[in-house]
Image (cartoon, rainbow, N blue to C red; front, side, top):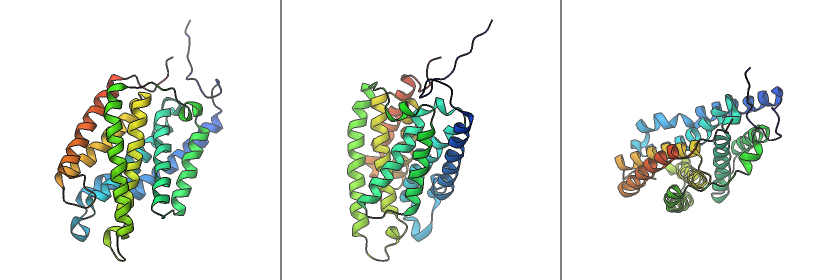
Length: 259
């Protein structure tokens, strides 16, 4: 005689098939749009030679934000979304960070509001919606020791980028490509994901944050003088943070529920 187990859902019963189909349609569409509009910069940004290559770091900030904090977490909802509440939470944090950053820079656009609606729809349809929105706090102290100063540093850097956005004059090539704003949005999203990962001992968000920090840290060390670079010191700190976050991700339990 064999027994089967079910992954618990918000209501304690298996979600309706139509609900899962709708969730996957929303998540898939949003993930594809994010990958095509900005996520590809995670790969192509390294070689951007426009205007003498000054956009490379800012391209990578956009790439991290739209690929690692949005496209990947949303794509994870396409198969067994009940196993990935933490990933859905990352997407929600990232899109809320985009909204906050856009308000701060006074540059709200319709596309951002549509993206917000898609992500909110994914969370509303998620089979573990309650856990996405009201997770159980399980503090990972070693990661929290890193997360607090890292989040504070990222927030401060985001404020500086918004200030550059306001200071840019008409025709400024960096402002024209919304580079300063992209760096600010990415920093806000990463700061929230890093901190939440430590407070919830959540593996997937910690790994996504580690990947983002590694990309930005490595690029900043390679190009310390480009606009929006963290510099050699900041880039090195980001690389150390990425290593710690990745190691702690495997030290804590996964986000999968016990059977």
